[in-house]
Image (cartoon, rainbow, N blue to C red; front, side, top):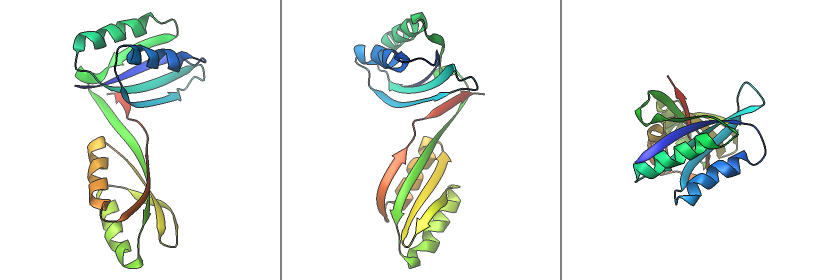
Length: 157
């Protein structure tokens, strides 16, 4: 089962390594990780996505996270109402005759062209993982040159 966990931490060197180390020491691969400062420069917010087959081990990791001195709070969003978003940047080649078709697809997903030159464009989309997956499926018939995604960002409602 996929879990999204947020960790509020003191913004100090080595904290990220210690948090990631707890997951790797238990054999879990972090599938997505986003870290940024909060309103306070002294505090960072981590959003961690991990596939956890064994709930007991994940509970153990969360307890160990809470014991780390630089950790302020740990939240597992599995049973908590929340909003999830991800940012996608996509570089695509297109011809003049494909431009209208691409614009129609982008409008459907509230994506937009943020840069273009000749037949090359960079597209931006913010949305849920499923929406991004659908956009990519609709654009796979075009020549995608490069793709970059942030990790999942999550906030309790």
